[in-house]
Length: 469
Image 1: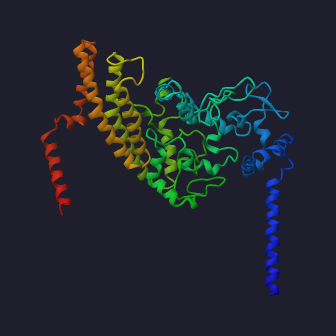
Image 2: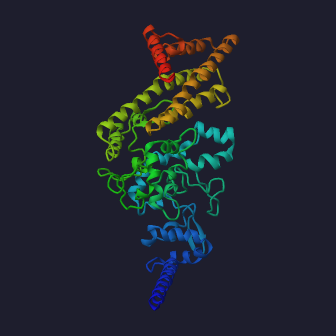
Image 3: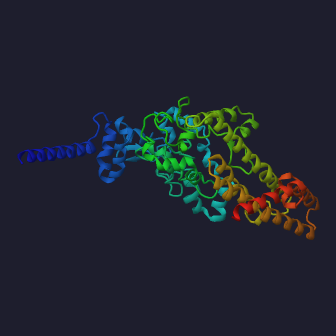
């Protein structure tokens, strides 16, 4: 009995000591922290304790990087303001982070993410700002793409543009982006940025459902089943070395491999652009402007390097044959013909040309490439057959044959009846005729060979026999 009492006393003492140590660790301020940051903590630890607790959890805490080291501002800065005797700025921009993270800063500034704020003036922005209304864009579009942050006369930020952690935010110091979009204030946790949910803040929904696509794929299924084996807090996090259960968005687009360094340029391993009405190789636009950029071939080689941690070269090469085939199918069968017809109709004045989304055809065409077209292409890129087929190519086909072409024909009939621009009408009719002379569309006109008809009939009969049992 005496032995048990001693045991319980020792356990109680150890628990009490641990609680005291934990409390001291939480309350302590690193001895080498600057006096300015110590002053910040003395107030904010009481006023906003969760913010300080997250900072204590971060690697910044261990490196003696405190509040003032990040938020300090030159009095001449447009967003500088005086706060309890210090000149500070609310926003810690990528330019501020570059004082310690220069490589990451430069990679990000060169990335497509950094240009996400250039949505202003795009069709998406017209929908948000005009068709839906300004506050829809403030609370929606700009929270992902980023706002142009505006500053009041006293250095505070305007409520129309802040808070905002959009990936392409235009900051008062001229830098682009927000590191906190992925790393989150104030813990700046690498593990958080490595998880697909982090990307899902923006990459989901009807026009870019990458998160849902990932969750459908075998990659996503493996990740969620084995998240405890992902080693997300690893300091290196090299696929095939530090973890092997599954890749995440970061694995493929950013993180290090045995041969490649980590990069903050999320497009450096992408070979196709899947965003526009017609896909093109990722370097095509830059090359057309005479710019020297990383080639799509080199980008693909880098992505294949990631794949090689888990897959054989034959598997990877064959995947890209299938993926390229899906993109070519979309481009040639639907994307290019629909775009050519639409541009001719709109550019010839057969529908209004000075206002977006005031004609039914504009909505139909937008759905075709911006929603269904993207889903098909993105689904093929990320191993999601349901998004490729039923949420993708099926809906593209239905939209093209049952809505887009009939609406164009209705516009042409109206133009003929009113005597509007006969030359343009003839040109559009020629484009439609040329489209339906393509082998890919002959099924619709019935202009198929006897051999093809016989083969389809045979396939149907065999199908019925299989399922008649």
